[in-house]
Length: 316
Image (tube, rainbow, N blue to C red):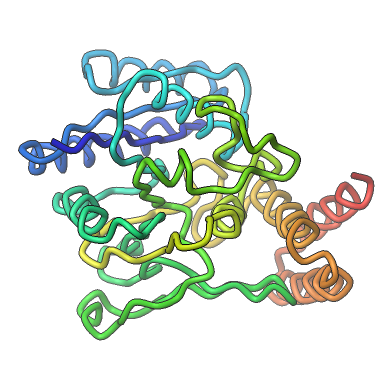
């Protein structure tokens, strides 16, 4: 029987996290003959009431393990705490890093396990992410990234779910970060260490996700650190409804200040790490293009936030 560990973060969004876990438990029942599921949750310093709701909902579910962090560690560090617990306490065959604002369909869990079993050369699997209506494709597995101007394109975005069969697998630049499904070997031996890390660090001590990125660009960093011969692919039949933004305060296509700040800072840091000779073009072009977009939308509240991210990046 395959053993699957799921890593989820919660930050002031207990209701979304509870709904996500409930959808996982339903899917686990369907796959119970072939897969044993354990869920590891890190609460990133949520408000007391939010933590209480989550604890009460999870306390009688033996396969759910909740840890409370005393502050918001961000995406990478929060998941790294979960991964450390998984490697210490649970002998997993597969590990799934999943956003708490995802609702998985009943067949998605089994589909991902089957895809991974049939193609062991793939190191990271993406799923079919759907918009909240459940009918519109948000991202078919992965995305393409323009390193010169820091823009991205989600594969299959905007198409109706009935058009899935018309989409073929693609050579993605990275897998969409809302759902990252790994054979455990990818995290144990398949990644180059993060910048400045010791390549000989044992599992449980290393940074699986690069903690330079508090929010956003973690999945791009993972793709850059995959060792030769390890690929990325899309499990088409793994359907997931991705509402989006529950932990960053983003709603109705309005990005929060927290999200805007870290999206900007992470874009600059990613370029500095992997494409430093392109930073001279990427940094000003991204700023002025984003400035134009914000002015056209009338969303001037984010201009100062974006500018602060640039100042903080320059100051180190």
